[in-house]
Amino acid sequence: MVIVEERFVYTTETHLTVMKTSLFYPGDGFAAYDSNGQLVFRVDSYGPDTRELVLMDQYGVCLLTLRRKWPSLHNRWEGYLGERRDNENQKVIFSARRSSLIGRSSVTVELFGDQTEVYGIEGQFGQRNCRIYDSAKETKAEIRRKVDVSTNVMLGKDVFLVTLKPGFDGAFAMGLVLVLDQINGGDGVVDLYPNTDACNSSS
View 1 (cartoon, rainbow, N blue to C red):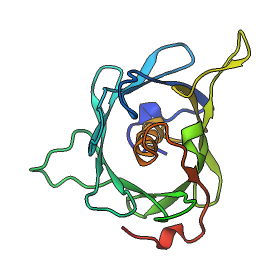
View 2 (view 1 turned 45 degrees about the vertical axis):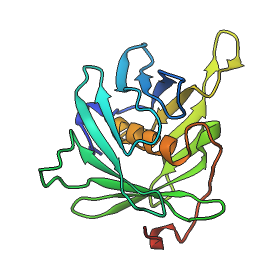
View 3 (view 1 turned 90 degrees about the horizontal axis):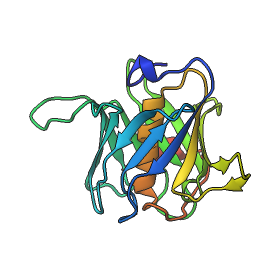
């Protein structure tokens, strides 16, 4: 399903290697590469305490702008297609938020269109071990630690894999990775567990 752009919707399972491009602050920039080592997505270093992120393609074209809704008790982020301009009436295409203020919490993602679709995210993003699933609980993308195939050694958390199931928009998935990174405070370990009441929570 096309959410951002059709070129990022793959017909076969696709693995992206995601790397932090700077280590000065928790949550610095990222670069994502395909299995051939070609750059697919990039996010320039954005430093601490930001409320806006921009996901770009390999040419620097803005694909998604992500903004933290402020104030928001549930750490809600909203996504816009392309570059966000304050003087234009752009529609929010999705929002993502923690489902609970305290304790173990999943993340709920609402995708807006002709009909609202709901996705969930569970696991431990800080440990690079979580999955994105749809309302039928079918896995659409997974985030895992990357293993060096030549040495069979697991790499550090600054390099990880995003596995996209066929038909799931890779740019949308990468946008959710950026939101998770912010919600979880960079490398902080926060559990994201499924919560059947997630859809009933609000900011």
